[in-house]
Image (cartoon, rainbow, N blue to C red; front, side):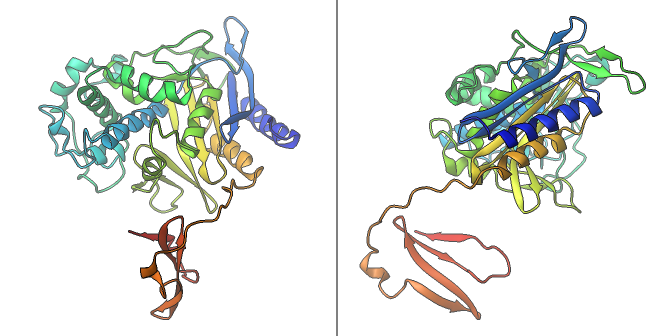
Length: 394
């Protein structure tokens, strides 16, 4: 079902205002609810030189949003018992040093430097996979493992190598077959496919867009190489909000969405889970990621309580704060719908050993309520000064 008329007009207004005020060559955006694309729109030029109008089917480089796909691949291998999050990196990659763990790499708590070794952003030449591990000895570790959040493309380049070594095939092939295809992301590819938007950097003091080079990712591909459309990214948001167990269980995606590290230590607005960025908006938490590359910016986020999400892509590498624009869209979609509630059905009677246990008890003067729901003994603190959540007993 398409988005309500008021919501569609609001989303269109946000996109068109952002494109005009930030002088972006083009913007493509989409929204999703319960797995269905409810709105999409593109405005501006996908190719300035050819005067080509952007459409929702145009691909853009999604850059670091690729990291979320790589992270899902790692978690899938974990769930299959082929690795552990607390494995040292050198258990899977011979010669890897620095005392790194899979968990630390996923959550940007490894302490590793941001980029792969070498002057890659001066030469615009990334190392090959054969060069990556030998160069790792040159990498600096400015922070102790687990001390603070420190973003690292190098960390995800190494995780891509772990996917390849553990799966026994190229990481791109493994993720395409076991993650992207089951989610239905048919327009998400490792190389640009037509139609694709050209990347630009608009001059700050003129209205002249400068065409940017397409940089081959090579060893950094698993951190920043994918191309996609806004609608395809909304399918990814739908997966985050309501996981397909053929790819990952709900419990594992919730684990990935749980807090691991804080980015802004004073404001508590942006954190990181196991591969997912966590955006706090008011009292709500949106789950997704940003992407930035030469000529491109992107954002995708989901709001799992309502199974909603949004994605936005632009072919300008620096023209707008993409997370703010993306969350504005995602917030508008979430606000337009009520939470999705599962239909209640009668359950089984509690076992005899729980007789006399269910109901209200008190601990240190606070009420604690025990219930039997869905075959589990549960407890909550309804009057706690903090939301302590629900405990489930086995």
